[in-house]
Length: 110
Length: 385
Image (tube, rainbow over all chains, first blue to last red; front, top):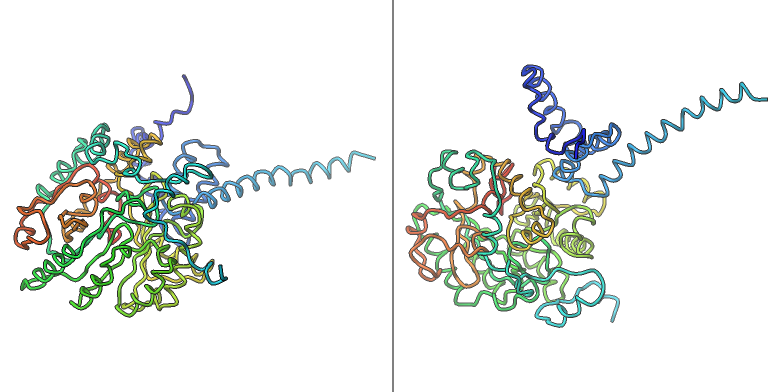
């Protein structure tokens, strides 16, 4: 079946260097450094990435950071809580705009 | 039942009834491959399953472990000085974990080391220690639950008397069985290191791998070890925790995990420990059965091969360890032991041990060995790279 997203494409991420090796090198070097243990642990960063993956709705990232979170020692409950953080912020972001609706409606209504 | 009795758990071994009961109600419990008489109980069937996978990763892209070693500068895998004498005293265990590479369980009552083999091990240890350049420093006792062997305490005492460091590979729950409740203090008096299996510092993963209720029992056992002086930085009372991934992924960074585990166990349970070993699961025995059931065998082997790290080879445990089975046979490691890959030496029983011949052997390998060379490396002593 034709689809825009192909699971096997995740493993080909590095092929993006075909169009520009220096930009790919710079990006992947930066990317690697971002996820190293630092002020945040590699596990905490993997959980943040998992939450962001759900926000940007990238299926590659969801697969990759589900595996990565597990390998970094997170368990299913921690990963589920991370996804709920993304969900809460997304929902909250919609709802807080409701204040704009409320103010606008109040101005228009009797 | 008095209230104090609730502090103990029953020792459920030797029980055919237990195996029969377990199929009736409640969640399906794991039983040994051996008890179920499944074809996969045989090493030949396990090798067939591993060799059937098409592997293209790794240094040579052949999926041949020896070829990948050779391509990494190791044309032959040869021994380093012998430092660790590991004895698998038997397959009997009070637990039946989902990933067990030994296929241990309450039904494995036959395979238990006899006193004559124990004494033959001690004689071999004496021979090794008598060598002028002996590097032997540790006796590593594993199983099954090694404590269930009737000669366990004798063996520990004899090794301690020889001035050797002794490690007990403990499943934790055994310490809550009334007959073994004295062990934390008993170990502490002898300076025995206790290396305990705990897949995760939280309940969900631990119970998924080791059975419902294991987590709470494990925490209780860890408190008893702490009370006996373990896990507080005393080199004579070392408490090591050993984690295996709960699923088809690799072990995480040991040092990073250790900090997090220490903080979490202290905060959640007031438990302290000294160090964490993060081990990979070997694609064999009950873990292989799980991979096959999940149709994950190829993906997991690919993961291992793609993570092949030549820097792990020098520190592989097969190079500095002898592994002896309950019946006195010798192997390059406990994994080869369970796959019945006898070491390439001109004698078959530990009673006939010869150090020179042992050190002259070539180590035997197969596809399961990719488990020890993946990522940060994996051994009974934790990461190797």
